[in-house]
Length: 237
Image (cartoon, rainbow, N blue to C red; front, side, top):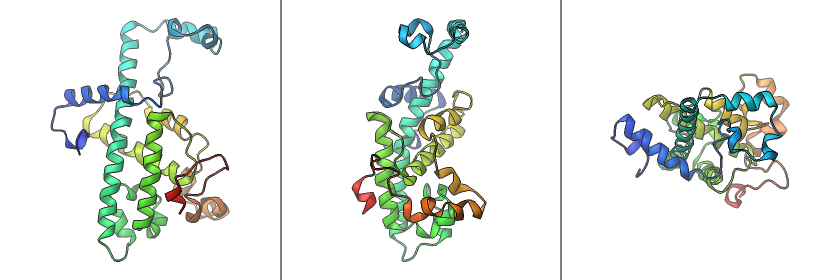
């Protein structure tokens, strides 16, 4: 895929530069939302009021070298999320192509896919071509929020798409041993998946799923949480 890490044959330094260049494209999330502590000198008086004096003093005490390292690491994370969103959609289309060739889809078939294998395995028998098409539409809508301005996922499928995006980012991080902020995934999940329901789908406890079947069942994955939440029309068809 043109422009993706998977298609690059450059060394790690070049990959880092590519991701740093991609950071500017991630206009839907600020570096602060990705975990970068702001510097007091760059705050408005109103913003400074949101912090305790001790916190402001601690932020101001960060050395220029450490500050620059933190900025670079967070920009690298932003570029990684941008790049991973493209790879995610590309691999979902690859999964769709694989499933389209099958007369029936079994859990073992799903286990061999690139992205669908990351979804809750107990529902694997439902991951046919139609489901994958819907999931691609939702995933594309989620990744578009990285550009137009982040909005919380409006349904379970959208939450799962976010988790697949972060899974892809972790794969790339591991392959290239990227110098990212410590505990970056937890920080990003706190922003993108606040109060998420989808984590329960990965529970080993049958009681959890049975008790919440009226909201976690497969038939609810593409249903909007609230009247104001938006889910692409195709995904609801």
